[in-house]
Structure formats: structure tokens, C-alpha cells
Image (cartoon, rainbow, N blue to C red):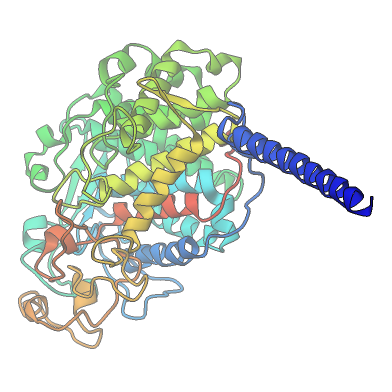
Length: 526
């Protein structure tokens, strides 16, 4: 009798255990199923204020913003770079202008207005989108100061409605020298565009820089903001009414920053002017005949100093994400958004329409010269687009029948940033100063010459050719980058791979600011 009771008890407990196991299994299956088939309307919680900081991106961002200080011309205020000093103080004096500010383009001492204006526009965009995230790591004020250093130059470079000074220095003579900017002694000739020799793309890019910067300074300095906007409107009118490429008007610019067309800059500038003014005429400009002529709808392009189309498409897509009734249903804006989606689909590595323009380890790779411009600019746009989707509760994009979430796009953006910071076959950071291994022979004059030496124009080539590493660290410089086979030759004479540029710095600052933490995208820049 007692044995039989114990047998029944065992069976009862076994039954309870089986039931519990079935219940637990059902719960687990339900959780997994819910996770894998989550609601199309929920790609995770919409971020609010800046959240947790990702330390590696914070460390990298703090370095990247310093390269603007390395590149500054003029009377340096609160100079943070010990081996830099005042330079270019007489720039513009031949025309009774103060063009002493601005930034040197790359490793040389030229001030090229076209890429410098692009630098300002991208930096403005980064601040407008990610200013709260920059502020979370104490970099917002520094970024704003660097932006103003450029816009101060651009304001002075536009003394009349139809006159814009677009270059300081003679590039051929400049490249025949190798010395510190503080020790320049040669003449610094000026190049201008005007009604007789127009330059649509450089005038329009400068208008974009002024318009976007006017939004950055709107609350902190309303007078300066209004002045920037006035210049932007004048320059856009000048660019639009005098449609001639500056490469045609001034053939000598073709050797360094040759333009492949001005339509993208016109749309880019008009898009920024719409954001800055709310004036319907600028929206009509980009969504009407000009859009049909220049936007290349449905054909993804790369974002760069020369081609602003992909950037324009992402910038205008935010209006359909966050705009009111006057913009959300605009058929012209939908064309920009669909093309922006096509850009994203091309970047996603597993997409049916993924681009083949990438290395074996996944880095976007388009050009042997300045190779990192395209992966960093692509990742910057991807970070923006993913944030637009997440904040607006947009569940997915469609890529030739396959669906992708905001998290997929952000994962791509992180992959490019991580590659730059050292997750690559060489285990080397391409951001100077980040990590233990980074380029030591950067193609940069000031970095290559000891601060206590003052070689003249020709004597300085001794420092170009020496086998010693640079005595000064060009902190925060983003070098040109690897070849397609993912090799990198760290040699000072290797300008193809080892020369940094100021506009690349604007792009990496934007990307890192977008990844350093998360926050809701702003609904409007105003």
C-alpha cells in the first residue's frame, strides 16, 4: 500500500514537471517568435534625449574635431595645437579684404573655396542634426567655433552680390614649397568668380554653407545668422542666373578641384535655403523642372565634395518624414525620398541591389585617391536616414522585395566607422591619434617640420624626404585611406593615401556625432 502511493506520487510530480516544461517552452517560443516577427511599426523604442555614450566613438570624435584647429589660418585665438601659430595674416590684403581666416585645404597651404564651403555645409548639417549628441561629450562649442572660423572667411570673400573670392594662393607655386604655414613668404594671389567669369557650383555651395550655418547660429547670434542668410540668398541668385561651371570659366582649377557639373549644387543650395527660410519658392525649385533636370531620380550616386545629390536626397527626405501637410504628400519630395532609399539599399551589404564598390572586408571603396571620403560620407548619410526612420516610426525600407530596418542601416554605418578606427586587416586606425597604431608619416607640411625650425620654401623638402616619423602629430586627421586590396603604405611621399583633408574631417565628425549616442531626430531645424 505504501509503495503504491509513492508510485502515484512520482507520476504526479512527473506530470507537473512535464506541464511546467511545456509552459516554459511555450513562453520561450512566444518570446522568440515575437522578437523575430516584431511589429513592423516597432524597430525599438524611439530615442529621446541623448542616451548612453559609446566610449570609442566619443574618444574618436574628440580627436577628429581637433584637426580643424590644425588647419586654421589667421590670428589663432586660444590655440590648442602647440606646434601651430599665426599664419596667412595678409591674405586678401591685395584687394583690401581680410581673408586671413578660413582653413588650409589639406597638407598644403591653399585655401580652396569650393571644398572649404562643402566643409562648412557638412559641419553645419552635423551640428543641426547631432548638436545634442556633440554636447553630451562636450564637443558642440568646439565644432561651432570651427564652423564660424570658416564662415567668417566666406562672408569676407563675398564683398559684392556677384563677386566671390574662391581661392587664396597659387597651387603650382604652393606645391613647389615644403615649409610651415607660419613661415610662408611668397605672394598669395586671389582668384574670384564674377558676372564675367561665373562659377555656378562654387557660388551655390557657398550659398548652401551660408544658409545651413545661419540655422546653426540663429539662436546664439541672430544678427550674424541674418547676415549669413542674406549672403546665401545673394549667392544663390548669382549662381542660378549665371549658369556656367567654374571649371569652364577658370580652366586652371581643373587640376585640383575640377567640377563635374553644377546641377547638384543648385539643388543642394535651394534645399538648404528652404530649410533656412521656409520660402515655398525654394521648395518649388527643387521639386519642379530643376529637380527633373538635375536630380537623377532613381539613380543612386556617391556623396562627395563634387557631387551633392545623395546628400540632397537625404536632406529633402527629412521633409517627407517630419514635414506637415504641405510637404509630406509632395510628389516631388517623394522622388527624392525614393532615391535616398535606393542609396541606402545600395549601401546595405546583403541587399539585392548592394553595390560591388567595396573591399573584401566590407569598406565602401570608390576611388584610389582619398579613398575614405566615400565610405565615411555614405555612413554619415546612413546614420541620418536610420535616425529619421526611427524617430518617425518608419518600420522599414524595401530593396527589390527585401525589407530592412533602421537598425540594419545603422549597423552599416557602424561598420564603416569601425573599419576606419581599426577593425580592418591592418588593425590600424586611419584617424591619426586614435588607438596605438595609426599613420606616423602623414603627408602634411606643418606636421612634418619641427616647430623650432624655419626652413625656407626649398629647404623644407629635407623634411618631406626624411625617414623619420613626423615630429608633430596631426591630431584628428583622417588620411586618404587604403587601396582596394586593403593595403596602406605609410610614407610621407604617398599623398594618394596619406594626405588628410579638411572636408573629410567634417564628414567623420558628422558620422561619429551620429554614433556616439542616440537621440531623437529634430523635427525641424528652425
